[in-house]
Image (tube, rainbow, N blue to C red):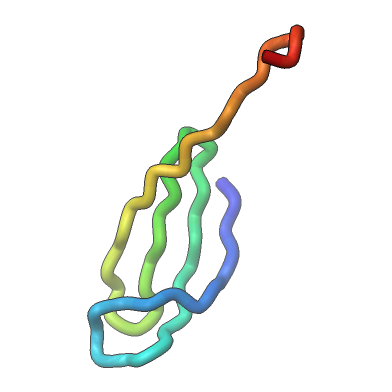
Length: 54
């Protein structure tokens, strides 16, 4: 699982909290707020090309 830190808006009291992004490789990315601990899941579809480039 790939983890990185990024600034991402949240509904908590902090204006611009830091989030930990966890990419499990299954298309879902998890954003965890460092301020309030809320978790947001974001679907990131990946385009897979076949060997013919279609």
